[in-house]
Length: 247
Image (cartoon, rainbow, N blue to C red; front, side):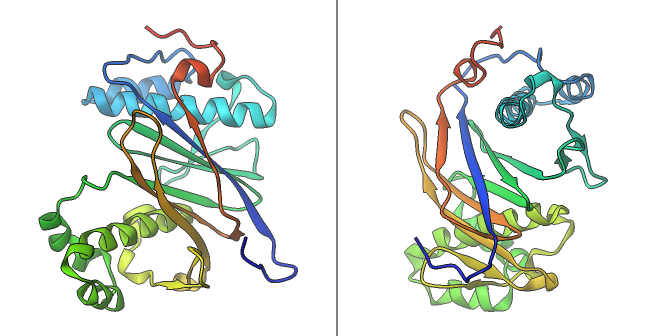
């Protein structure tokens, strides 16, 4: 456990992961009418499925935190499309997903952003093409100093951390990721970002659960944060204690 400065408020963050089995159909019964309309507008069945799973995950976890039924939780969107809780201003949350997994970060008393990525989602060729649009000059130099076999993973570690910061700040890639410079805050995996006159504190790593591919993850907060612990949920049914019927 790292030593934090005295008087510095430490963010308490919960991380939850839900793995989706192939071919699993998920009911929209607990979603709001607006969310059901968004599901209907998706052209991709897989994208719709991930959206439903994400909403069920946050409705279940946050509903338990605040003592309300999942379907009773009000979720609104900022002008930038970021979901928030208008009835619980002290709680912030953020969602991310890969092809078969949804992740949720929940924070009390501060802002939070999360990103998860599968290591093979971006090929080495694609990474080389997009690096100049994601990394600042110092980070590009860092990549070039790495042994060739480590450059791709190093880039992914930058990518996942930067996206978590952008999501924490609420505008996503409407802000230029090259304006964010990631610097080691200490000898742990904590990182400090001094861009935009706003500090963000980051934890990141890799994680896997039984019978599911591993994934890279990063969580960013507006306050210093201790090492979060992942809570893995094996399926949607167990997540909400049988209140959802799977089709």
